[in-house]
Amino acid sequence: MEIIFAIAIGVLYAVSVYLLLRRSIVKLILGIMFLSNATNLLLFTSGGLSKGKPAFIEKGSNVPEPGIADPLPQALILTAIVIGFGIIAFTLVLTYKYYSKTGTEDLDKVQETDQFE
Amino acid sequence: MKGMLTLPILIPLIAIPILLVIKNNRIKRIISISATAALVVVSVHLLQTVQQSGIQVMNIGNWSAPIGIPIVIDLYSAIMLIMAGIIGFCISIYASKNIGSQRENHHFHPLFHALLLGVNGAFITGDIFNLFVWFEVMLMASFCLLILGNERAQLEGAIKYITMSLISSFLFVAGIGLIYGETGTLNMADLARIIEDDDAMLMNTSAMLFFIAFGIKAAIFPFFYWLPASYHTPPAAVSALFAGLLTKVGVYAMVRFFTLFFVHNDAFWHTLLLVVAGATMFIGVIMAASQNDIRRILSFHIISQIGYMIMGLGIFTPLAISGAIYFTFHNVMAKTNTFLVAGIINSLKGSYHIKTLGGLYKQHPLVAFIFFIPAMALAGLPPLSGFFAKFVLVKAGLESNEYLITFVALLVSIITLFSMVKIWGHAFWKSEENGEHDSTRRPALTLVIPCVLLCCISAGIGIGANYCLELTTSAAEQLLDKKHYVEAVLKISEHENPH
Image 1 (cartoon, each protein chain N blue to C red):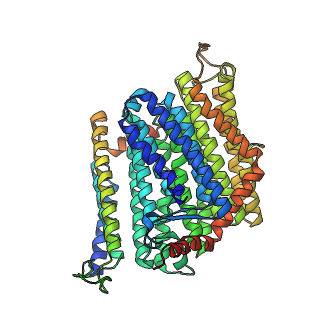
Image 2: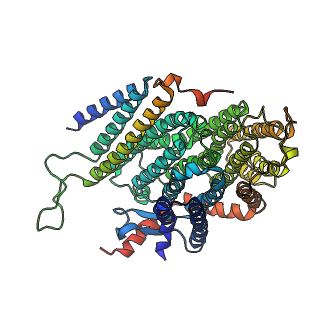
């Protein structure tokens, strides 16, 4: 089970690095999205995987059964997903603004602020 | 009494909604200034409390420590809080003139307080995931502040800044995931207890992920390219705020992590930190010396000065860490001040370019004076603060036989002086080329007051270096004696919650 997740995470990271290195800003944003999802999956997997045992305490008992899924990584991922979602929305609007102002989305042309005067 | 500890995040949190609903800009400014003044008072009080009765801990929601999220304030946190408070106060005064009513109508003030909220939260949290959340609060506010105004250069700088920040954030989360998988806890004190003598491979992996994540935020070599590409694009008040606070939060997190729990494998880590520190300070200052825009010179300077703080961490003796803390405080005061003065120069002359500027010394001696003080403090002339900061770091370097980094630090200091003299010579001493000087133009008082205040602090902590160094040395000892921290966080929670 873990090995499948590990491969999936690796593929996602590879895809994201590839996209981050492209020249188009839209692809850059896609790369950031992949990076965010790969990281969330990594967070999820590193907490340990368990099959068919949700993080609930049975009715009538006060302590959880041994071997249930760790609820903490799930809570952390929820936070990370929400933050990631907000950030992606922000970046998309930023790119749109930049595009409507300059008419380009080529990262090689984004070099005005690095110009040596 | 314990509720005091939440005030550094509660004050901005209350200020944000109030500032959002108020329409009148004048009232907004008054609220903004008084909220930041309250922050300074609260953080000074917190420092006194920590000095008298040790590390202060409060568990949010009364959940005991390894489960719940604690607020932990030790001397280092308290010093950083005071620093953030002072910078917030000065910039809220400066911004009331500099930022312009259009940006104020578009919610500059709430964003400014959101940024302070994130910074203060990062300084006082005792949980690494919570630290990530505060980082994101801070980053989101800084993204919005950076693009406020929608100028082309701002959008362009924002693309670079945001991309690098996001990559750093995700590396941070990946590090959190790995460290949680290994130890099963996210509480800093609990981590420090568990990672004792642990040399697992995975620990080094997550340490490296954290190092890169904080390195990007602190703009160390080789992750600094986003900083000079974006910091000079927003208005001076925002530039100064970023220059003062943002990178230092990265440095704070790095110092916290590498003194509290990543202390194994120190031969490798301390060598790496020293190499990175040397490269950061040297490359930063060389790049600075070649620029012609005042704000770009100062932006590259930020990078160079971060190197000194990392150097203190790399040498890793109480004296060196103490020097690093003192240096951080001094640097934030002086660096913010130079950015603010650059803004005044722009408001007088309409340019940041040193080739077109000139004659400022003759026309505006007061502006020349408030630039001279922080510039010389940065270059390290006694009796200003920079001299003692560098002196302590160099002394610590020589004591632990780190001659190479000490040599680089001294060399960089000379080039720093050169680039400050470059600004001084061109903008202040050189006679103006097209000498149409409008003698009626005076710098606005609201712009000058915060600069004078910061000048006084720069001179004050230089003259009172003895007292300040005593304080930072006890902060450094507290950092290095991590047993203190662990006991304070974990014991109190047992006491409060006997189950």
